[in-house]
Image (cartoon, rainbow, N blue to C red; front, side):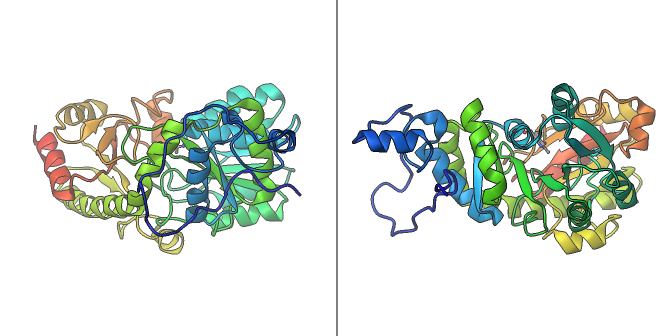
Length: 388
Ligand code: PLP
């Protein structure tokens, strides 16, 4: 079998010479002879050849990601959506059936419903919070089960081990979106999922300046993904790959500091709720979280995203939201800056208020992605926004 073209081991020698890796933008590379040209072109061995087929900066980052996720390898893409769509398109064929969680990133469901079905893939929905419902869906053959946890924006937690167990027993593979909680908060591959896909735009980049994604897992399942990427050209480019390498040494520090701040902020906001100034706080790290037993089993902490229900419905939420001073009014998460969104205006705007309520997303819900400003700064900001 030819050597895989991803997950090339990264050297760990002494720190000599330039400490930051070179950025190599060259789209092509000169070869010593015809045989080398042939072997590289056929994908029989890794190496510099033509940038769309792989390049040093992406390979270096992929090998770090693979080790971090506990995977055989990682295949990088130009965005999280390129990674998720690439993983599915590489493996599916007309007539296949995908079970897609209701509680999934909107871009993933748009892609599945607009594009996968166009190519003859059947897409059925299940709730990641209803194992009996999933089991019933799996009574008919399905090839892939696609889900994520923690769930956006309710911050409920799905049972990753139970969902993968049910899928495996029915002969289906699992694709898990790990964007909200990368290692060390949650190691989805160790919990049994077959492939992890992730928007590295979030925590892996961490500075709101790079769009990227990856798929990680075992060689058997990554091979088709890497070959799909070669054919379709969605590879991560050298500049964002270099930025991701720049972000690498602080990844765990940032994630753990953001998580610690989110925990303190959630506790402060829970006190505000007890005092009647907020309706509710959702955060997996709070003792009152409905899935706390699962959180203890499959996560190391509650992550860095939480949600609060502001008083006064959508008008009240808008008023408080517009008064935020330190927390930016912006989509996304995982960066050093704290960001807030109103799901009723963004990710769940297409639903009616009644549909949102049924999905556990009240109109006054505000999602907060915690950055590195410090919990006290963020709590003060929300308190002043609530006082008006
Ligand atoms: N998955 C989740 C959970 C996300 O939040 C996002 C983006 O917000 C994506 C996937 C898509 O990632 P990208 O924007 O990098 O394509």
